[in-house]
Length: 415
Ligand code: HSE
Image (tube, rainbow, N blue to C red; front, side, top):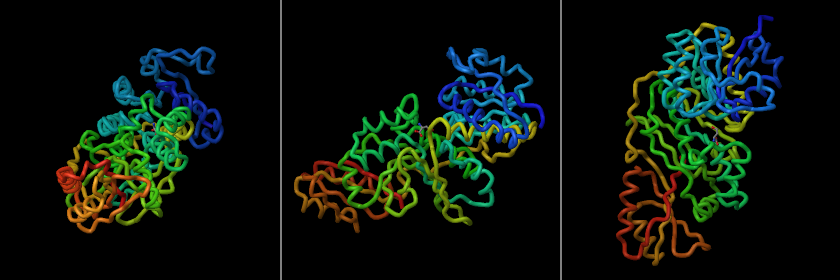
């Protein structure tokens, strides 16, 4: 077998230490697949790790890695935009392949870094940035290259899926479920990124960009998290036999493409309804292949590290060769939120239920009315298919009716 290959890891957190574990546990089979053994020569971190087996490999100087000609592959698992962006740019410009789990950086600068890798005959790969251990980046880039991707709906955040599952199935409070998810290592350092949907929006940005081979801007994507979800919402969803998931979606329509992040009611029988706990799934519709679903561990140390190591192996297999990824810098214009078609469950707080229902039924023609005996002073409707803009306008009209106190929540439904 050829001489071992030396790599460096930037960041010794959950994923960085996971990469070391995966490389050690599967050393022999990885060496066969890479065609050579893979050794970690440096670990860059600003912290010290006294007593840790990597202590002797630790460096606080990025330049040590950049200037070492033996290092051809670097795993950037620091997270965040800076200094990760500067480090990655310098490494790629020096012809070193970079693999990453850093969804924030990929969502923000993916096209630029892919171009830089191409110009320098190396690779920038990011399988672990979406869906942790689930293979989804490579399938979109290669296996589906004959497809027009019509839609993608993904449960892309393990923390929120864990929270919603525990609230629905075990009656846990939001706080209890969140602290369990944090203990299991699923949550971001600041879990607001999970709860408010920012993590999901980065991931759907990456998937939509790959589906279109162009750049979708995260800031253009309407994003709603799960913090407004209450036990009362869950009670209605349960009576429907449905489940609630935070969904990142992308869809190509005859009028244009749209993307959004929002909690959605998933009907029983839809493959996404079966995805529980911290599992992720990506449901992809192609115009030739039809429906496909990719399922697995979307978060956690070893699944994410496994995807990183697979990228390291791929980089080792392609020394000085750029493997093409179609993601151009050209910007995609998304349809405005008001034009997106939707059906929704709307909870109406009302002092005269009989009259309130009549008003709702005349405004939302063909809607279905729901009542929950344990909830007084309110009812809910499920609208027909309308646009977001129309539904919001009709909800404003509800506020003008004297015996209607307001709208407690509007929750979108997955078709
Ligand atoms: N915080 C993320 C999640 C980690 O919960 O899915 C994986 O990106």
